[in-house]
Length: 326
Image (cartoon, rainbow, N blue to C red; front, side, top):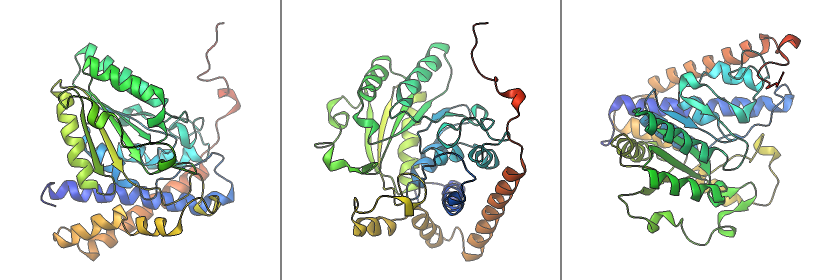
C-alpha cells in the first residue's frame, strides 16, 4: 500500500464494494422481470473502473461500454438514478429511456455507455480533440473490451490520437472472453501497440486489472501525461468476468468455460484483495468493514425502494428527445 495514500486506498475499496454489492442485488432480483433491460455485470472486474476513475478529475469525461455500471458508479454517477434507469422509471439517469447499456450523466463526468462494440472509442478521441482545440485542461477516458480491440476503429482512433497528441486514455478491459469466444481463438500474440510505437508517442502498459492500486498508479501516470500535452495512453487491464456474459450467472450457457478457470479467478477477487491489504496496513479493521457493508447495503436498499415507487415516463413525454424536421 506504499504506492497510494490511505484515503485513496479506502476510497478504492468502497468504490469496488458498491459495484460488487449492487451487481449482486441486480443478479438476485433480475429473474423477477421488473427490470426490462438487458444487464451486463462486472463481477470480478471492479478494480479497473475504480482505479481509472479515481485518477480522473471532476472535469474529465469517461465513456463506458454495454458493461458500464462499474464505470458509471466509479466516475460519480448516482446509484439511485442507475437503479431507477434499470426499472425504466422517469427518475433514471436517462429518464428511463436508456436502460443498462446507455447510462449517462454528464454532471458526473460520465458521457455515456454504448451497446455498439467499439462504438465509444472514436467518440472518446473526438472529445479529446475538442478539449485540445478549446485549450481545456480535460482528459477523456474510454473503457472497452478485448472484443472491441479487434475492431478497426480502435486502431484508427489510437493512430489519430497519437498523430494529434490528444489527451485520451484507452482502457482495455481484457477479461479474456468475447461472449463465449476465448481470446486465444481471436488474437495471435499481444497488441501491436505495446511494441509498435515509440513510447514517447503512446504510453502503453499491461497492468494487473484485479489490483485497484496498480490500475490507479498507471492511470495516474497516463492522466498526468495527457495534462502535460504528451498525448494518449493505452492501458490493457488483465482481468476476468467471473459472472455470466449477460444477466444472472445461472443464465450463462454451460460448457464454454473451464470451471477451474473461474475458480482460479474467484480466488483473485479484487475486492477481497484490497480488503486484505487494508487490514495488513492497519488502515481498517473488521468493525470498519462491517460499517461500510451496512452503509452500502442501506444505500442499495433505498435505491431499489425509490425506483419501485418512481413513476414511468408519462405519455406526454413520448416525443421528448426525438429529432423532427417540422
